[in-house]
Image 1 (cartoon, helix red, strand yellow):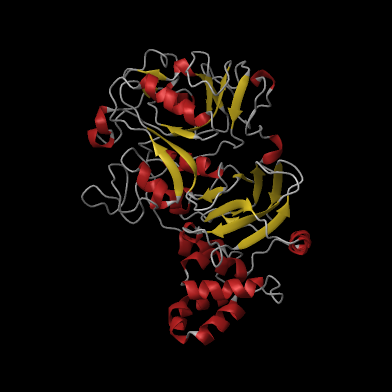
Image 2 (image 1 turned 135 degrees about the vertical axis):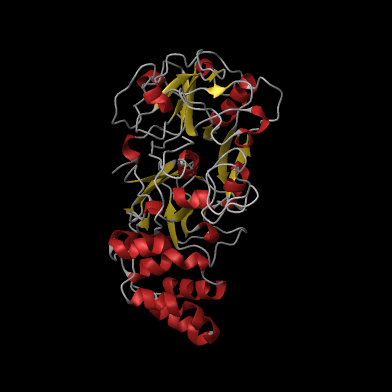
Length: 471
């Protein structure tokens, strides 16, 4: 499975020279470095490279956010990430924009909307303040290291050799900065303990290019350059510019994702899926079915925990009460400091799914046994139940609560959700009309396992393919 078996430990305090390489299927091209430089200490987040969409200006920002979110247990489609900043500031590629705000399809993720995007996805974040005095290179590197040393991924915003460095004019580069691309940085190494905040010249970072599956390692003193890019990036190849970019040392940008916006303490969760490619629904490509592998870290052996799955950003609770919001709850007892779970229930690549692990002191051994037996007996299904479940977060709370009760009952065997909906509608007839269209679509076979053409009619829009301007 594309995932967890070959990943580095999330906190690897060991010789990086001996560390197992990250996923790679491409050649290493000079001046790119494709193996970690020697160091005594390192912290690399167990997440794999992914490929961005190259339409509508380029989805490098959305892909970077997707990778960072996966390091906290969340899968979010590139489409939904861009849509999360609808109505926010937009000086990048968008549709139906008015007065510098994004339209219905959202805006390219850029310096003007980092916070809006992360907030719309219920991600905790820290945005680099580009209003600081110039040059910012030294301060930015300290900021970056402070996050990476804690296992918090960073999105950097570099220039690329041969590009304009001002993709949509001065307004897209606030504060007089320059950039062309976004990439996730997922690890750091040093010959000094990572509790030492000092940035050393031989410190290194590892980032992804968004254009291939080869991890890129860089000495930290090689990351910045001036506008002409003839210094640290002087040897960079224009045809491989994403693999060896440099950030503008005077004024730059960035964002770190520091967790999910939750009201309760939670454990670190890493999510991996079985493909690095996401079908582009904006080109009417059919979304694919994904299978998630969840890794929970920081457990205490013998204690009880629960893994919750929430379908959709709207379902992620904004309070400490998870009831009525989660799609599944999997109680477990920790046998070690980490726990890996291969979710037997798939989800669509066009969706958003959040996994959250919390201590579960009240979980009984009977519940644990029942959950274990259920997990062993579950089979992957593309039934109408999955179709309804994908949309559950958009239902009124009464409908969601009714379906939740039915799912938790002993009579639920993983089949259609119509019985539960009928029960809810009997109690609240006024809700029936609003769901009549959905019911007709589902009964006609408009389900996860339906035809590709049906999915395209629902999720896809025909859009002009154009050369990416950003990334």
